[in-house]
Length: 163
Image (cartoon, rainbow, N blue to C red; front, side, top):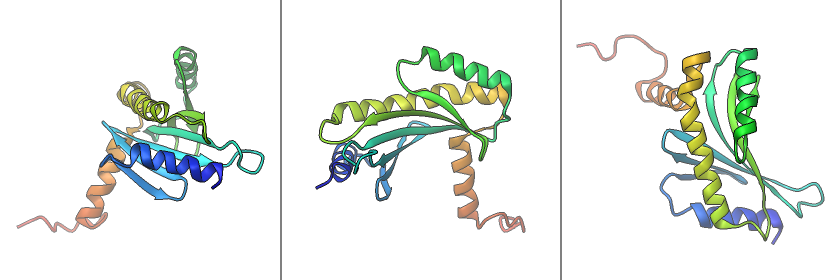
C-alpha cells in the first residue's frame, strides 16, 4: 500500500463517520462544516509519493474584485494566523483559506480533524467581513443559489410558480 493510499484511508476513516463528509473522487474529499465547505486533496510527494501532502482549504468568497487594499488586509491576517493562509485565485476571483499538512504513515487523525475544523472556522469568521468591505459573495450563498437553480430547473424564468 502506498503512502498516498494510506493517507486516503486515514482521511476516510477519520472523517467518513460524519454525514457531512463526501468523497468526490480519488484523493479528493469535501466536508460541510457550519457555513463552510472544506476541501481535502491528497497530492503525491515529489519522490514517488513517499511523503504525500494533504491540502485542506475552504473557498471563502467568490467574485471579489482584486483590490490592493484587500490583498494588503489578507497579508496582515496571514501574519496573525496560527496556521494556514489566505490566498487569491484570479480564476473566479476567489479568496481561499488554505493549510497543507504532511500525509503518510505519520499523519495524525486528531490533527486532521482539528485542521478541517479550524479551516472551516476561519472561513466562516471572515467571509461576511470580506464581502461587507470588498464585495463578492460568500461561498455558501453561491452553492445555495446553484442548488436552487438546479431544483427549479435552471435559469428558466417562465413563471412556472405562477398560478
